[in-house]
Length: 625
Image (cartoon, rainbow, N blue to C red; front, side):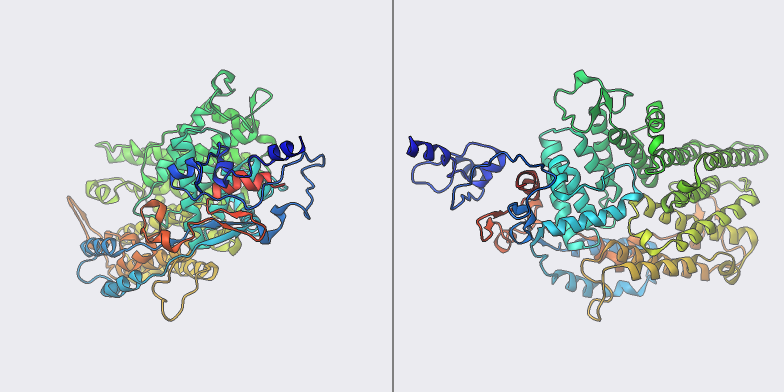
């Protein structure tokens, strides 16, 4: 019996690690070293040299694990392998950009266009982004970094006592999104984490159809800090937003109370408590609206999540924690901005210029009063938060910029369609300039650390304000009869851009050398944004220098040259910053499998070091303590 009992305990010693992770039966054919499952999936079949010890039920609290016996606390014995990635060959995209750029700038474009051949050579010689190991200590550092970013997006709350191991048990997908977003200042690591995030999202949510609050929260975090700077010409943010909206609807969050009969195929952990949606679930639904409204307005897409009474109900139920997480205040401000956009999207001029002027003044007064009502209802502690104060000033600017047509899309068609007798309220020009100055002066008054946590929505506010002030420059110059010197004196956009470029350069972790001063490899988001603003500044200065009295003329079907702005994305000197490495998993070079560590590795105690981050988080991280 003793021998049989021992054999029974060790009967699974032959099971490979892949089958253990997937909880599948591991079957070996006689004389074979690879199990049936690994042979069919072409995976590496790794078997422990020693039998896995049987787990015993620990009577001690899991909140106080024994660090001497739990391998998750031993940094030298635990790590995650991320596969290597190769930088792409950008020659095709670069030449296409160059041709289109010449269409905008003409033959006298920026001198940087002459360096295309050099840029191609540097890009083709880019080195491999090697595989790396993320230890438990690295994960905790990334989590700490995210805590500094989190206040800019209060719709997802992470408790102060949460750790990487605890999150890997309760919210593994949210943890993956947190680690991905927090690594954005380390571009090589971010590329690898981003590939892993998208792989898991595709596998678990799209292919397997899993639905839970954990997946929704992870999606919201990823969208909030979506890496637009990495894929500016292949922006997939709308796809992720629509996926989040669909997931929220499947969870039933578009209703005031849950319908328990609809939760058969849905994981309800953290979603429902006492037959009501949890506060985390309500914040998540409001976060869906906030991101959907902001992104769709910025990119001119239809918002598939319309504002509803449910959002007011959710917001009012969260008022007791508004000082800690001002969710409803942000949603109300976002809704006001959306109403401004909706009004002007359907606005049509009449045949009576005087009536159009009265309507324009009435619209400004209505939205100004609504903004003041919001200010009166919000405590000073909330209004003074950096991201809240910046959003407030942005709405104030939007009231005038939409009325003046600066945010019409496409703007050039708007200029072509303007009639000679189109109304122009002079006070709107002055108020728009004052609002722009208030926005930039507040932005520049913020501590540098405040910029590090900005979400893509806050970056978008900065882009929108720059766009408005640039277009306001030429309209005011034409309206007031300014020359170039007077324009520079009255509209300090160049000074604002200089200050922002200096700040971003100082905060950026990308350091340039004499060899790659013009195009460093793997620049971070701050460096890329600095280069974008520098390109805008160059284009803006060249156009302002050509301003003369009555130089800005709009005729039917024709626009004066200086009124035609240029998108910095089309600047070919910036092309090296807008490409991302390709993982071999997503169509990269087949040689990557030979270079990277496709084989499982083991530590000194035989513990496997996985390159599959999701498998590691949902298996080892949660079970080893």
